[in-house]
Length: 234
Picture (tube, rainbow, N blue to C red):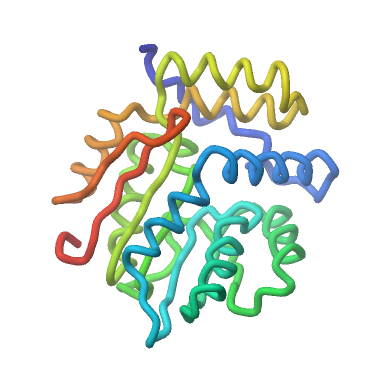
């Protein structure tokens, strides 16, 4: 397996300051499709189903929310399940957040915030803290900050999900963006992302450096991984 390719001077196109364009909107649609097809939505719902019950309200924080598909998926599931949730969703990119707000007009229990996920919030203000497919955007040092901060904000549980760097994953993304999702922004960012992703061993090491103990860590479908902790370990 090749070394992680991370250059802080090279940013994914979706992270750049930019107006709302058809290219950005199409890229976000592609990301939602990938999240749905490759298990990100199912992973989050399975995680919450094992932890949330009716009879009390739950506060959830989604870090690096993108177009807000994870919060909307949670809100839909919670409504069907009779579970009361309020969701704060955070992203640093203003145009992406504006798109998320437009798509979430029928979800009054989702609030969007523009902020750096390394700094947003304080104390154990949320029951559940989530962060999906964002950790690879950060250097090793900043990834540790995100892991530590996410755990500090959660009073019950924290779940971090991301890509898993491996040779087959790199090949798969290159093939996917050559034959299907060929839009320039999606192709560029997907190929950068898979090479910036942390390996399974690397992510475990980052979590340990961040002070995580007694955590769960598993490989997931299509070259992804998830790492989580519950309150007894936080």
